[in-house]
Image (cartoon, rainbow, N blue to C red; front, side, top):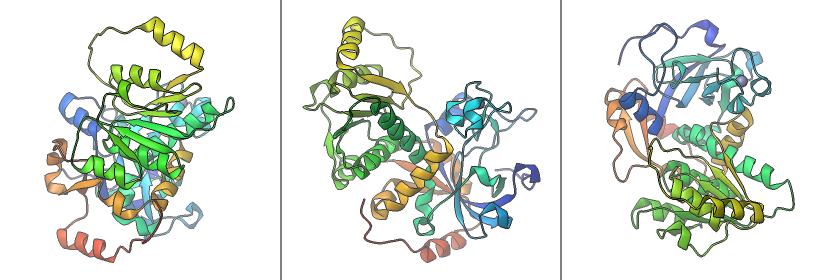
Length: 353
Ligand SMILES: [Zn+2]
């Protein structure tokens, strides 16, 4: 931890106090492998792209008021901006000159306070409390599902069965959104016991630990969350005619393997199947994610946060335990302050998943 100056005014008119920071594989890559890029001319990069904060100051015209619970958008438009960024679809940026807070050329939210433009602040239902820290990862799945539906809408499309490959935080949030759409949802992962199968079952979804190729399913929508090449190919073959397969995971391995590429091509052509990649989220996907979290069972969401670290111990979040799903860092000043906030945060009860 280091001392930083107060957040600069040009960062935006909304001043916020950071409550929680969620950690993920990207933070581990930045810390361990030097994946991130500090702001120009600086040696350090403040981490933290999964944020939860409370507004301290905001002009009336911003639509925000002190006490509002918010999360910040990660990617910011390229300076040009390209046509996609100009349309608030910075997730589809054409130039690659965007910045990402806590990842690429802009400090993240892992400071006590930050400023941001209201355009990049996302309002959370106050009753969500700490669960609002799940907004950023949820926005990634809101985009994956919305794009899958938009692609499916090119022709008759009546998706009923969803397959989610991987039951980490991304896979579990994908399963949540699939269930909220009423899809018969199946999640496949390697583990055979523990929190993941129970979390899947408690959504009313089905958990499998059999190889993807052997699943007795014909999914209409696949959300691939492992980034493993064989899983991608097997899930594509498994998918129903006209299915849409969303790839959300990546692997940094340079593993080569044997694949029947002509058979894959034939299957895609004769099955009218679409495989597409998706990363990050546009402004509207953050709002969709905020609605999805507000509609979810808060007890289920709370079980995704398996470890909470005081800010002094944040590096412990870079190590992921076998039962860890989402690790969060408490950015508030003291333990007692944190406890009083948790006690006063009323959570809605009896909401459907
Ligand atoms: Zn752009």
